[in-house]
Image (cartoon, rainbow, N blue to C red):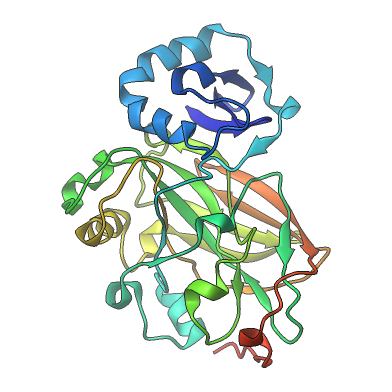
Length: 293
């Protein structure tokens, strides 16, 4: 099953062909603030699963191509990410700050964007903006100090995620938190649709050129341990997102590019890159030259 937000912030379920509105089950209303209806659906998903399956099987819904898909979880309690979580990316960046050493960092939730949105480049002359291909783990069950062997009890599903980054040596959170820098989508695929989380392939293209390709079997910190480590410090809540880290192949994007990400068993989305006029600040005034190791 796929869980979506669409049109005027409605919440729906999908089989990939149609979307069935389930907004009444989670109190989703146009203009809701903060937009947390989907967090409630994720919290109650297991108790609602049988009812949702019947609705998806019996209700006509809308053709999925007729709706505008939005970011699935716009208001997570936490947007967490693991740095340098593939050995090939560590070599590429000449980095010793592996996920197994650094733990997780946080991104601003306001950086979230949906599959129908554009990636807006900030006005930062002399700085490159790079793509990073990642998987989003979507938390569905609250937990603290979760042991690795119970981690998947808390992962409701998965989504595609792009971690856009201003390349430089300044604070990582700042470089990754510009608006539109965390596209997520096109939906949340429930965990039962992913046969083996330790064997998920992923690819990223820019203008049809394959830039990144990897598999979760190559992770330094695997999915169960990512959940466990994160929850050792922070209580995980329904709707929290954990970005798994990027493999090698990161590279620059410029206005006019189209970035496409595909995660096996999860989905695919393509986003245009546009040049914005905002974002300049003294921190990024000094140019930075990215040298691939």
